[in-house]
Structures are given as structure tokens and as C-alpha cells.
Length: 112
Image (cartoon, rainbow, N blue to C red; front, side, top):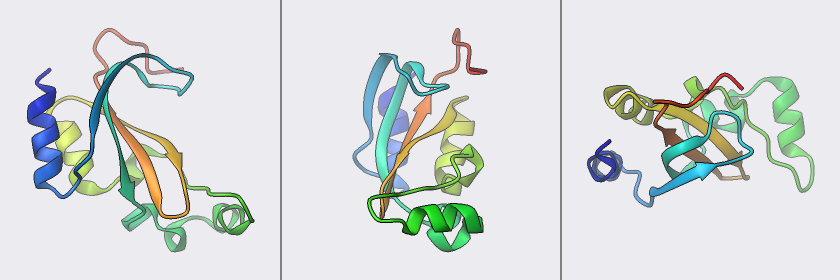
């Protein structure tokens, strides 16, 4: 995988700051090699676009919630991932940012 090319495409799309990482994690679907970075909660990741239950959880003090369906990631990130055969994993969320990883699925079980 040409990770530098993927990072450049992410930068060109306005998503700077993605970094390469590898190994095993406790996050389902995130193992092997990946790029990870923080993006603003935009589009489907905005609080207003979440279900009522998630919006309620998101407003609780000290809490941040988002539907972690990869299809909720920004469309340009999804397109870059698709172009390179990568999977999108929403790792964590804060009030204004979401950590997203683009993971190379080759040789890794992403069903867990």
C-alpha cells in the first residue's frame, strides 16, 4: 500500500494530519496497517444528523456520541478509501472531532 499517496490525497481533500500506524488494537476492524487522523464532525457526523438517542447521549455532560457506521464518514474520505481498497473505521469521538482510520483489510479479519 502506498500510504504516502493516500496521505497526500487526504491532505488535498482538506484532511491534513493523518498518520501511519500498525499493529493490533482493541478497536474492532482496526489491525494491521492504517492511517489515522482527526476530522471535524461534519455531514452525517454532526450532532443534528444523529438519531434522537445518540443526540441525547451526545449532550450529556462529559459525553460525546456518534453513530460509528463507516458510511457516516465524510464522503471524500470514503471515496479515497474505496479508491485504495481500504476500510473506514470510526475510532472515537469528541464534541467537535472524530478520529477516523483508513485500514488495509488484506489478511485481517474485520468481522470482529
